[in-house]
Length: 373
Ligand code: ATP
Image 1 (cartoon, helix red, strand yellow):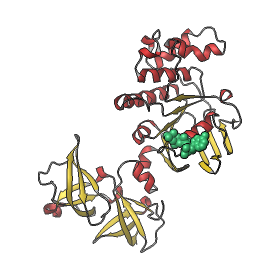
Image 2 (cartoon, rainbow, N blue to C red):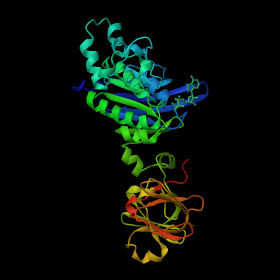
Image 3 (cartoon, rainbow, N blue to C red):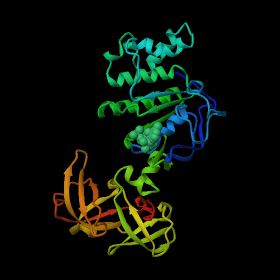
Image 4 (cartoon, helix red, strand yellow):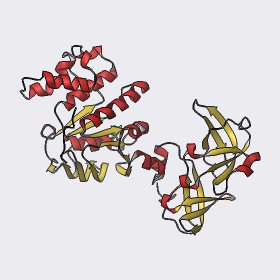
């Protein structure tokens, strides 16, 4: 199948849109641009305002302020059916009495289009349900029903497809399969997808760009790897995986690096990886992702290469989780936190009670402002 659009009509531009309910602000004034053809995820915990934002794009919710543009067209006050968008909900909302073919054909028939066969067959092919055309929705699995819902929305040739927790009702395995499936479909049709989810793994797997929302605001926006490697706030650091935060004090700045004191030791933080304003003597929260850490028994500490960040600790617990072993480490530099590390070597001495050194490349360290929420 060829790309459905070649212009910028699938750009989504939100300018200062907000939503208040009485005294409560569900979405604070928000500026956001989603480029044509991208897979964009709104990610956040329950109640953060992501569905409200999506519904304002769909026209299902009137913004309290601001404007919504789709391409060059302002749609802020247009009703949903006059916007070039379609929404797929978690609850599929298929017509139970119609077969799959007729469910997908529905939008075309409603517009008075008579010859629907080729279009419906192409669409069923796209979502790999060509064989199921004459079945009723209840005869399909949850994942297949969701694909019918996607086909039914796409047959209207929307410029933008909005997806509101579309995989929320599926079990984990099916969910993972459908994530890849939706990504494939989006790549094939080439239109803009805006996907709402609370599942960070889902957002990271599918989206080109993720906006992490918290309490009605976008905390950070970026490519999944960028959000994971360079979180700008503790919320983002903790929402996307395990962050291992250590309280440290700025000691000196040398060239491109900031040298920090943490407990009795020193840690190096590249300036480019520090989002904390900080001054000399100031405090910084230092983070490192668990899989970047190597664990070495204290007896072998002499073998650790120069220039690596290192902290000492004691193994409190370990659990085998298939591809790796997850360790919980007690360390004097993070008394309130536990540090998780996954080591690749199977050192028989790495058991609870063992003294260890955790070490990592300074380039994998990120710095956050401890003063922010
Ligand atoms: P969830 O994943 O649980 O749907 P969400 O991030 O999508 O959460 P929203 O549905 O956008 O969150 O809701 C944001 C906030 O606005 C919530 O606190 C919710 O209770 C509130 N809210 C949503 N709709 C209304 C409404 N019609 N009247 C009053 N408050 C509302």
